[in-house]
Length: 362
Ligand SMILES: *Cc1c(COP(=O)(O)O)cnc(C)c1O
Image 1 (tube, helix red, strand yellow):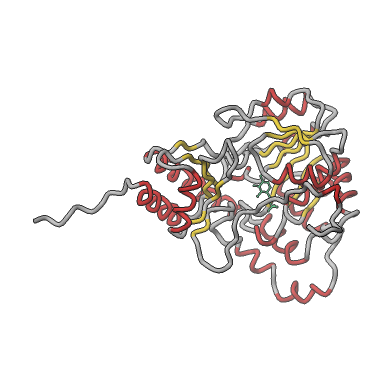
Image 2 (image 1 turned 180 degrees about the vertical axis):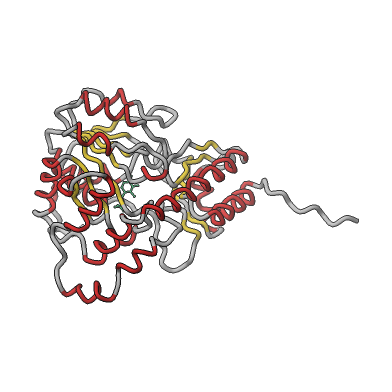
C-alpha cells in the first residue's frame, strides 16, 4: 500500500478469485465455468461487422440486450438492467440500497464478494450464520429491517430455498430490498422472477457466466420493478454508462435467444452432478444436496486443503475456502462427464481406495 492510499480503505481486503492459471492446462473445476462452448448463435453474432463497429461506443442503455432479456422472462425492458458481470450489479445494488446506517444482511457462508463490497462502500455487514448443516433458516431474515442479500442456490453449498420462503421475506420486510442472487438458478433452483410483479422490494440478479457459458464476456443482469431498476441505472450512469461492450451485447442477445441450447447444457450438468454426487458418497464423502453446477463435499480421509493440493498435483483444480467452517470442504465444479470421471479416478488414487489391478497370477 502506498502512502497515498486513502486511510479510510486501509482495511479493505480484495476478493480472491479462483485461480486462473495461464501456463498449465488443468482440468478446471474451480470457478464454476461451463465445460461447453457458448451457443453456436453467439459465434455467428460476434462477427466481422460487430468488430468493425468497435470504433463506436456501445449503447449506454443496452436497449436491444435488455429487450432480449425481458422477452426471455416475460418482462418489459424497463424491468432489466445489464452489468459487466453480475458482480457489477450486485455491487451497485449494495451501493444503492445500503449505507453506514442501513446494513446488508447475508449468511456467513456465501459468495465471498458480498463482504468486500460492504467494506468498499462503507456498509455495515450483518452476518447471519447458516445452521450447523449449512442450511439457511429463512426465519432468521424475517422482519429484519435491513437490506437482504441471499444467493439462491447458495454458493459454495449449492443448497436452495423454495420460492415461497423468499416470498415470506419479501412480505415481512416490506421496507427493505431483498436481493436474490440467482447465478446458479438454471441448474435446478426455483427462480423468484415470477414474484417481481407483486413485490416492489424484490431485485433478482442473474448472470450469463455459468449456465450460458459466457464467463469471459462479463454479462449479468438484474430484474425488478421499474423504480428499483431506475435506482440501479442511477448508480450505473454515475459510474460507467458504457458498461456493456458491443461484442458482449451481441453475444448476450444471441445467448438469450437460444433456449434449447441452454436446456441441453444444463441438463447435461444436472446429470453429471447426480453421477458425481453418488460417486463421492460411495467413497465416503459428505456431499451437500446441490442445485447448482458444483458440489460441496467433505473428504472422509484427509483435510480439505490436503485433498485440494493433491488434486492440483494430479492436474485437477478445485476450490478450497480456508475458513473455519469450510476448511474441510471442497467446492467442485461440475465439468463434462469425462472430466468428472477423471476427478473420481484421481480422488480414488489419492485416498487409496482404487481397485488395484490383480497381481499377476503365479
Ligand atoms: C459467479 C457468481 C457471481 C458473479 O458472476 P459474474 O461472472 O460476475 O456474472 C455472482 N454471484 C455468485 C453467487 C456467483 O457464484
